[in-house]
Every structure is written in structure tokens, then in C-alpha cells.
Length: 458
Ligand SMILES: *Cc1c(COP(=O)(O)O)cnc(C)c1O
Image 1 (spheres, rainbow, N blue to C red):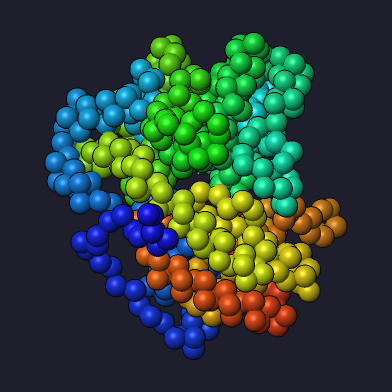
Image 2: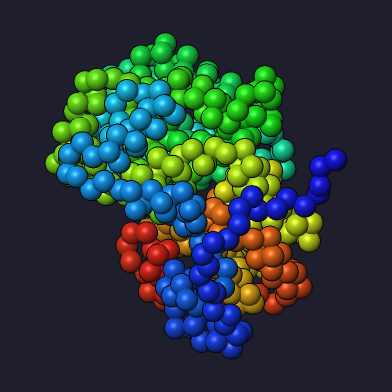
């Protein structure tokens, strides 16, 4: 008889105190931060759901690995352990360590990119797109059509649109294609999973057009969980085996270890092709470090090698996906509009629907992140017109397609009572929704304005 309560499958060995601020203090802090949670100090936050990137709690095994770290410049034992772990997981023979995901992106897409080149993905993550565009190339996002329908409970909303993929490959031709990139899970698309069937079709199409197929595998363990539970034929396969099957379809992968490898820093690039790997290794040595450490210390590589195993642990993944769903389902039941089904690493609230009285140019998403902080000290991130809005020639805002707020769940950091507290904060959000006010931007930089913009309330 299985029990209803999913407990955290770990005991707490070391704790970090949380300062319990008062609503009066938070009002002061928020004003000083110009109503932008990115400008808050971490000490001023009670529950920090800004990102799941690099915010994981490491295990006692990983901390033991940190002490074991071999800091030799070349051929360190820590490198050997890291390399063999990544090889075993991915099946790719050439492994390049990098300080985080975007460094691997800069190396690979910088090499493959350039003027006239084209990259195609279910959705490029923002650093992926930035690295591609910085090289002079163009990046096309072609998520499946179910991804646009918020009501649909299609189980694999992270899939790429296969028909559009073939159209684009035909249109541009093999020579112009830098790579096809499958992001699993699809972070920007709501942390939604990609099916094995979709990944297989992408492989067949890439083969037909003879183009490079790369997996952005930051959250491939979480994706494997969804395949195991939602796609027929995978019920008896382990999460690791599912990931290995997916890796076997592609020509290489890029990973930010700050996600499913359960560490605070690190990443890698892994490739099948020897010539491509040799060219990338040259760039690695010039900008990251020698090929047996890249941008990492020996202890970082130890922690990643261990974290890559732990990230596929069945008890851990069960707790991980269920606790994200727990938050999403509970606030949805209170009438808070969320993207559905709930994805792997985050819950996305539709602030445009929650606050219909706040127009896009008064930033309903920013209003919600400010309310969450003021009411409960919860820090979340706006993913709407503050982050993606543009101005037309007359200086009028062209809003983002949706006014979302992301509640990203750090791995192994918060317990159910922390999450229950966040759910309670949403009771108050729901009760006071009609009195929430929009904001105006009073200062903003040219690029990536969400990080540093200043606001005032209306
Ligand atoms: C985080 C992330 C990256 C970039 O990795 P960093 O380690 O932050 O540089 C790339 N792709 C996806 C899907 C990500 O989530």
C-alpha cells in the first residue's frame, strides 16, 4: 500500500538559516531594489525561486568528492572520473569540460555558426540564441503546435514541429545548417518534456539532410522521468537507460551541469565526431583551459561526476517531479492560472490572466513578482514583457506573447513545508488580486533589461 505523502528522500546534514523578514522590512527592501527582485540581496529573501540553475544542494557524497579533488593541471584523477562518467552516460567518445553551459555553446556554435548559417530548435534557450546570433547566424524556434495551446494536456509539449523542421531544412539546404538543437526538457517552453518518438524522428530527418544533431541536455534526467511515465514502451526502462537511448540518436550534446547534475557550477560538450571535437578542443584550450579541466577545478569535476549519477536516482526524480507538480496543482486548485501540465523544474503562472486589469505596458508579471515578495518574501522571475518586450519605432511597447512568472524549484533545497508556505502565500495573492497594481519602467539598459531595470509602482 503506497503512502500518499511523498517525503524528501534525504536527511538534512547541514543547514543554512533563513532570515524571516517582516512585511514592513520587505516593503523597504523592495523600494530600495527599485521593485526589481534581481536587485534584492539573497538575505532579504525567505524562499528563493528565482532559478533552479546552480542552486542545488549537494549530497554528502559530492562534498566528499570536493575534498578528493585532484587539482593537477593535466590528466588529474578527477578528470578521469568525470570523463568516464560522462562517456558512460552519453556514449560520446570526445568530452570537453567547460565552466558552464554557455561556454560549451560559445565554443560549438561559435565554430559552426557565422553569417548565413542557420540553427533550428524546439526552442533555443536565451544563452543558446545569444551565442548563435553573436556569431552572425540565425536561430529558428519551432515548438510543436500543442505548445501554443495552454488548455491542451498533451504529454510532450516540448516536442519540435517535425513538418516545419523538414520545411526549413529543405529551404536552407545542408550547407547552411549549423545544427538542429533539441532542448530537453524545453526550458523556455515551460519545462515541458520531449518524447523519444520525437527525438527519433529528428534523428531520421537530420540523417536524411545530413545535418548535425545536438541535444541540449541540461534537464535530460527530468525528461527521462516523463518518458518513463508517459510514453508507451518505456515503463520498464530505467531513467538512465532512457537518457542513454536519447543520446544515442544524436551527434553530441551540451550540458549545463548546474541543472540535472546537481552542482553549483560546471558544464560540458560531448561529441561523436573526431574532427569536430579536435576543432572545439582548440577553442577550449584558448578560452577555457587545458582539455583535461576546461574551466573547472578538479573538485568541480568530482562533484559533477557524482551528481550525474544522483540526478538519475529513481527516488530523487520521483520526489523532484512530484514536488514541482505539488506546488503547481495546489495553486491551480486555488484558481491561479498556471501553464499546464506542470513541467519538470518550475511552475509558470499566467499573470496576464491573473491580473486582467493590468495592461501589458504596466507589466502584470512584474506586479506579481512584487506581490509575491511583499506578501511572503518569495522571489520569482518575470518572463513576460519586461524580459521579452520590445519597442516599436514610436517607442510603444510590443508585448511578449504571454505575461508569465516562473517559480523555479532549486533541487533538494526546500522541504514540503517550505512549499506549503508558498501555496499559502498564493491564498493571499488570490484574495488581493483585484488590488494589485502595475508598474512603470523608469530606468533600463539596452540589453537584457530585466536584470537591472528600475521600476515605480502606479
Ligand atoms: C541553463 C541553460 C543553458 C546555459 O547554461 P549555463 O550553465 O547557465 O551557462 C543552456 N540551455 C538550457 C536549456 C539551460 O537551461
